[in-house]
Image (tube, rainbow, N blue to C red):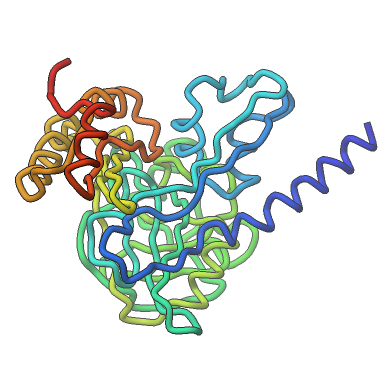
Length: 327
């Protein structure tokens, strides 16, 4: 047992080291480069859950569960092979500053690196609960705070009190502070991007509207972001993007939000793809693949179309990808 434990610790250390590098990407100047990252995989033992795997590789629980529908999230078969979804389509939003897509629970940070390359770093996050939604807006970073105290609003104190958990008016910095060690305040009163003292909630709708990040990720972001950095918050349960001449579709399950009508994926996706065909009529789309991607909603980019280079390419691809909309 001791040897297994040591091996497990070694595996944990080795796995966490590359994952910070896996979320950083250089953006080229090419037009059709909407995809970044590369998927990986790992084996799951019966002693761990998919949440354990998500934390080990610093992914969100929503990502790991959607990408692996055939694995029991709580009692996986020993030796199950889990997909690690690092490959993503960039959101349909300005590629500057911070972009948050609540539907997929990811934060995208765009900046120039030391070599003046345009880069994007992708982080998993937690977002607002179904009854306390993260606001969709354009805002900015107004303040950077290290070791922030927490001043819980009266509404949150009342909620905790109803459960028999009496919160003080001020929670000082430290291990019991749910804000973690770093905080970025936004130009929206009482909404922050911050760390956490509970690593197992990333990738869930568990906050009071704030954006929650892994401690390592918020520290990294905190040291790179300046005051007045723009922040765009969107809710895009599906994304469409190009990689070379290949068209990809990424579908996520819509957030559960009380009182808010969620976008119906099928209609929105069909409209988006139809608009692409109107602009680029030579594009071939496999509508059967589109339907499967919508049904499965794995959050993993799926190739659904192609833009041929020439007439010979068109004839070849027409025989390998259905361009009609029949079911």
